[in-house]
Length: 125
Image (cartoon, rainbow, N blue to C red; front, side):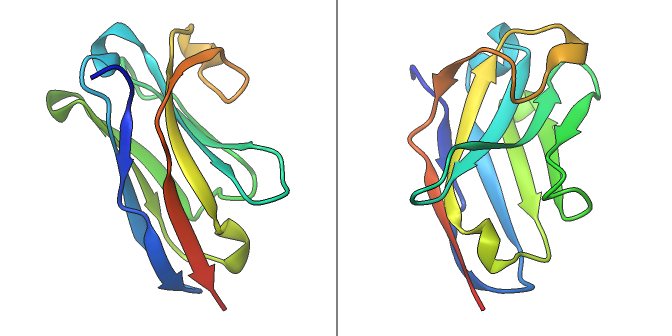
């Protein structure tokens, strides 16, 4: 495997929940910062959340704080994004990505070098 693989996207009504998974395989050991990004049609890519895989440091965009939770299972080499209280504006393609950073720099500004193909999330009102 040469890139992360996302899964768990789908269609849900506003207020619902989805959990995205990112199969990171070796990345979770060789890369120490995993991030979730999203991009809606006609909009710029947005960094949603990030987690330092060798500690507990996390980052959340203001738009998702209190609703989304990023977590990791190193034994399974998997990173999750639990999304609750979904809103129509959360509709986007969601991507998982990997980087090497200092723990304090694990955020969307880090240099993410490996990207998945994305999984679509659609929230209807």
